[in-house]
Image 1 (cartoon, rainbow, N blue to C red):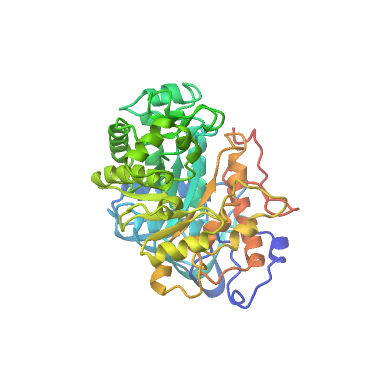
Image 2: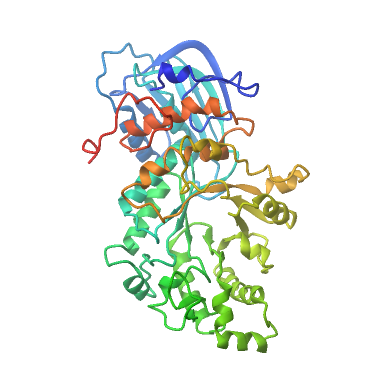
Length: 514
């Protein structure tokens, strides 16, 4: 699908001069061409074979069979490669952040083998194999690939509070994320505007806090998304952001929020959670107990950003409580008090957590396992300070793809490097940077436009998180990201163009895919 016109755009730096011109996104760690010969497959008869008993792997095979068979017309081929043999060392490996996604892929004219430590590594290798298929003549290059992710945490964040996203659209976004080898779905499920998560212990939260009874996620919806994500090698990371960003909680929980007329959030007379109300903490204990039971991942995201201090300051009951506890005038201390209580609750549930950077900078007593999530422009200072203190970090600053600009703005995302925060940082500090998360905040997206706005722009940071560090040549990425976009279109996904002119071999039409 990589057009000759796109190949002509390819100019290489000294770092990429020896790399084969392959339409792969993200680009593998190591690629060696074996010969100038090609392997030929028949997509209608080609098979994947394995001795593994993994049921999940069989489902992955079915998925990639369908991708291979997306064709308009196939002439009778002189087939040289009838199947791909897939070998897995550990078919029962759990899907965790540190689960191996390594694989090797060897393609010769008449044989091919994919070897991986786990089913999830095999998923990544099968995606690479599918990307190598030239759908004009169903040929593949003969080569050897050794591949693994440079960063273990390769996330994408979706905000389902500001505008609701249907389960079907979430699945489409998760599926596309697997095509770019992202592995964490950071689900910013609730916020000020709405509370669409239907809790079992507090059902009124979604009954009174959602936009409508139709704009909610039932427990079965949530489990469906978790299972779908697992089948695509994606961990679901839920975020319930507190004490700020909680206006939607208020209708169901009287007294939970701070009453502060004229100083509240988005025009309301209420602001953050009231940390001085002792009744708040049993609610948090029950709710987070539920969340940690529903979501099987290792982590929960606890938020902690943008707490609106003027609301607390204007409430006389809070100021009196603070004075009685020797916190007069210091609202960082009040937030610290709240966060410490919340973190103690989550610690008791044996769940690790991620927090926005403010929690670290307000000197909350976080555990050594805490991951600090940087989102502000001064992220390099944050990474320097947090890693010096021994904390692991992930990056979102520079990867807010909800912000759009005229032209090929994916190039700006492509140039962000999470480990470039300090030239004098020690190797141990750099190793504490786990990766990052591409963020799509929901102010201006819903079912109508999020798919095309998200992809393939998110593929640029996805490559940064997987591919070799030296691979920063935008010109080398240009034809590959456009080929990746066309591949998405061929698979029925409305990915937007990356170049100012051109076309895909297969054009997306709404009627065809609905």
